[in-house]
Length: 247
Image (cartoon, rainbow, N blue to C red; front, side, top):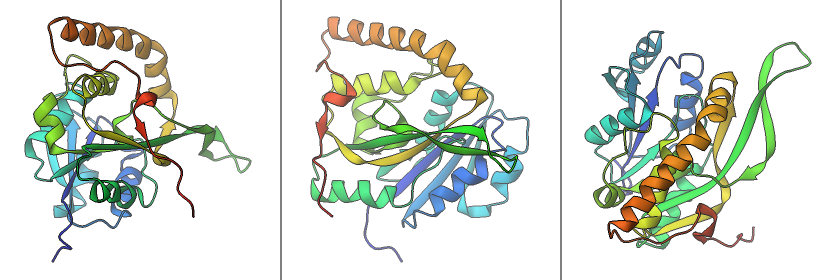
């Protein structure tokens, strides 16, 4: 029995993510949202990813593809997602408790909204005094083009299409540019909705790829505008933003 709330499909792409995967999944379960569908798309992992996911039984829907990158994996997830709303989380990230309740409430308050995003709190892997490695907060929460910080109505993908699998990294930049071009109704809430964990693998990827991908995504955006697609230039921080709420 469900509460009549919109159903959510959570799509989690993963490649060799056994170290972080359980934490990510448990942060989704802790949302306590119902009805909820969790789809893990294994992007050709060679570690224990498949074993870990199958250990959850029918609580998690498992898909597998040959390694093609997270954009292609998310597209596979979209192909099987049955929810009215879609959310994304990467295997090495976490959701703060109450994220889904907070963002879904904004949809209820304003049915014309199609996307609700929030702030990102970065965590960095460091050596604790005990000698164990742990993640600690890094800098103040910020806004950024990260899929995991948002929730998205299915209508968004009907307007924009799926993710561009040409982008093997940082495909969220291209996606948010397309959101701007199509004037998708989007609200930025003044709350943390994603814990992004920085570690050697993703920091290396960010340093070497993000600037290159941003320029390529920007060129694609300019090309689409020249071809006459509806556009609204601007950055993520320029979108409709919610005023802080009183306690």
